[in-house]
Length: 270
Image (cartoon, rainbow, N blue to C red; front, side, top):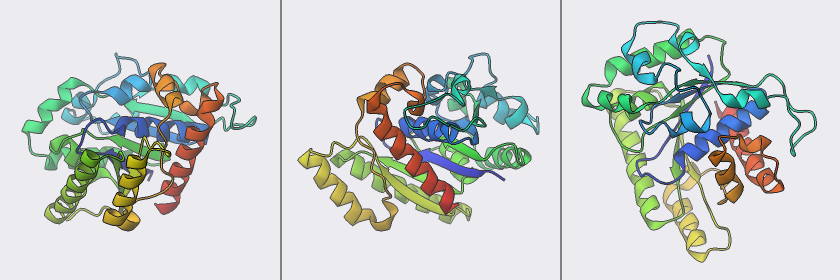
């Protein structure tokens, strides 16, 4: 079975999908075979991963009955062409990395009018059916509580709650953690762990420093390292639908290294 991680926040605009893409890039660079399930109706992860728009979408997969959908009805990321290429991080990169995508689409929002239980069970079964195909499954959840987020959480071993060092994001993280706790209680869900990732940090900004310490006080050991700095290189790479680990700019080395550290810690914890 692969390691299964969902990336979530019940507050939009905190860079949730940026974390999904950064982890996918780290996995590709590290030689892992990865499935990205895009449950966010905005489908930004699918856009960033450069998956063909003709790929079957997650709505059709969830509504279908194909037991091999996460191998037969997914599409390759355009990032796969970079696997094995020399980067600023190493001259001997892994060549075995590969990303497949269960493409997001606006149609998936229709599932939020339905009960999550049957869809949660279907997605779990589909992941189990992949057997040894993937090393890692990343699930990009919507920025709101509903059926789609419940499906992502129900399938996950670990949930990452993404936060920015700002007042509103601290409150949003509290809501997310309360939502996860209620979900676990109401569904008897065996989620192995929850972690808070601080994103878009400006290390010389007094407000950001204050909010980071506030989150460490409020959430304790749930806040994990590394903190991810605000990075123009990340924005440029995403704008080009390009993996940050392969972006040909020295400014990309620090964020890429941080994403690799984050992924390494996640994999070790599962």
